Image (cartoon, rainbow, N blue to C red; front, side):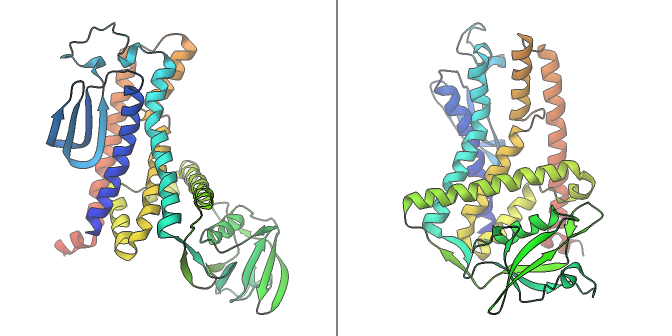
Length: 362
């Protein structure tokens, strides 16, 4: 059931994305002749007055089809309600609507998590120093840091009870190689001020050789005030978006080291299944995280993605006319083949790494 829950989450996020395109087009009077959730053989379909709606066998995909290039379409090529005949702004709204829909949906998922499920947080503020690196000469030990210390602040940045505080301290350390960091430390009843200078690792990031943990127990905090829930949801949303963009930046700048961390649909389903098995309440957060990642990936200016189509529109706006159709089709088809190839590679790779699959070949 946990696997089905994870697949259902991905299917809903894809549905939201495609609905964004569909609603943006139909609300402007633009013709849409197909709306499909999934790919592969058709399980169910319904022919409306203007649009064919279909559900296909494999729910990890979907598309909105336009009659512009449909050879069987009876709509005159010069009809102003064809997508290609609309002004650039109208087309940009349709193309970007899927990304916008995913971002809005992610925000309200986080608000729902905050209000109905509760936000996991530590019972005490600060970040606990769980352990130091075994080396006697570790940077943390030289600075006077000891296991059991609680970091209350770093460079004036106070740490509360949010579970993101641990990652925030890690980020401060990583981005400060060779630079002094002033720490406010609680040791029992004592309050200390210590200064630590992270050493520079081979990848250029800072490190002080410590293991971090949440301070106290992890409990769920329900926000019953609707206004506060919207505010907390906005904070969670901002943190996820920032972390996502940072992750993509690291993927691009350190591709050789981070390429192996790229996850495909099988890995995402596996992660979602584990979350559903351990704590179904976290599915809201998982769905919001994937929805934001889906939005960010789609807005990248790559062929076959929404960002690639927006790039063509930008070129059209600058040139005063679109690129020749054969060039656009060639770029989009090449990009689609590369993305499909990457997707198939990740699916095969991650499927063979599943525990039950490996047991079959032992």
